[in-house]
Image 1 (cartoon, rainbow, N blue to C red):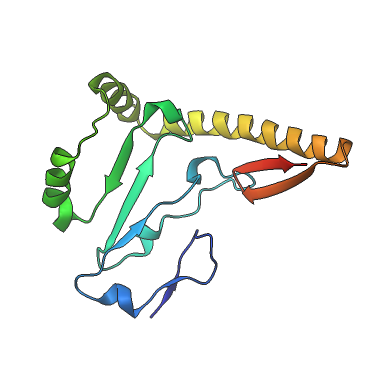
Image 2: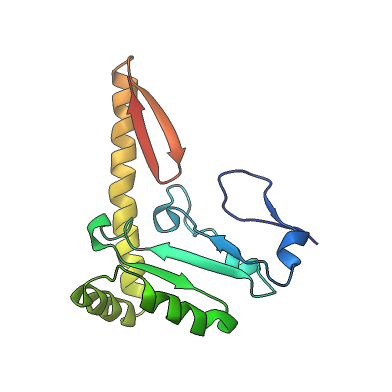
Length: 156
């Protein structure tokens, strides 16, 4: 039975019969999941709906920490772990080891420090969105465009 995806830019996209094919894999990148404004709870990842182990989840820490950090991660079904490790070894870019160690240490502290940091980033993002809204009300030539629940931009 088809399942609705939780957070895709085009509503109505479903995991359908194609996803049931033996060699099918679903690559998934949930944008701005950690700093979604207006949502107290994050939207569940598509991987949580996957009963057949066919979703490969790609993520980054650039929105929550810093784009300069350039740390990415992949969550794969257990049957693909060895293949993912091989692919990681042959990739040409590797983040500096000091950044990997720092993130590993931070993540080893558990969910509480990461969640606290994500809430702080969410608060900063909310201030920026509020500033955009205030500017668009104050200046008639500017109009606010909400692209995603975690961002905004002004256009003249």
